[in-house]
Image 1: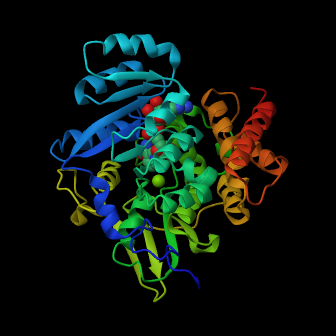
Image 2 (image 1 turned 180 degrees about the vertical axis):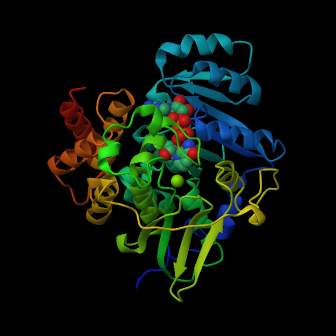
Length: 412
Ligand code: NAD
Ligand code: MG
């Protein structure tokens, strides 16, 4: 049984902040939103939510890595203060397309961080994919801005430093990942009560029930087809390998200040229960709904309020069955590797994440097969020197070393 409360902090809300601080994430009458990664799956759905609530939100910053056309379209529609295009080769074309609008245009990796440090928004929706999301998110926290966190890799890589900084700056981090949003929603009103454990549900992905002799031959197109969710390419592959659930275990540990053994994964193929919290009296709370990322996105943007919407509703009259089973960690070894990273801590989750990003990149380009991804990650985790309490600089170094090593194995 845990000796810590669910946050372990002398605060009052799931994010570790008093409720009144969270209510203040709204700024003025319009909550001013900065979407980092606005052209992705989460980013575009967030803009749908904002478009449906023009009296609640304004858009101040939009960023994209390479999709300049969509970025321009979004900018012309939502009229932000500024946009950042990651790919510097596309700067001129974005600048030209927005010449007649009163929108500042910046380009490059450094510009992302600088944009996060500007004081023109209330909440950052961190929707960049991968390690690239870490530095801008840290800058937003340093800038005292609330975070709606979709980018789970930020907490996987440097969760201790990110959460410490958030507490120091009294910045709320509201999860957008559906499982963590579910847990967060279950914890509202429960802050003085101890968590026994959390139960993260996993759909099992497109290859549930399959064995290695099948997996060795699966192709990129097949792996990208998720049964319940439509998502970006990287997280779709992570869902197929169950690495996504591994990353989410580590994300949950940091968000809710849990010990590794308090985080359990259960396969729930229907994706109706988004996750659960078991309290010390044995009572379990679950948050349910249809699998639709707009719901956790809207919840994070509007927190502490719930907004009315017309998203499809779950209908109990049409329910067939809700089922649960143990994950097959012998076949989906990424989940076992992530559990090891969760247990050992230090720089191991960071190293694992870097190797996974390289492995997924290589798989998406048909350079390695589905099962090779796990081998690349495992060998990288065995090789990169372990650091128990890394500084931020040491996390950056570990990430770099792991990427180089993993890329060498694959001969990228
Ligand atoms: P995506 O690939 O659809 O979009 C990623 C966004 O990040 C794009 O706007 C892209 O331009 C930008 N980007 C990519 N690489 C970048 C870089 N190097 N520098 C700056 N910007 C970069 O991804 P997604 O599916 O929207 O996922 C975004 C994040 O949200 C991921 O961390 C993912 O794990 C998490 N998440 C996604 C879902 C989902 O349903 N898609 C659910 C839960 C969590
Ligand atoms: Mg999730």
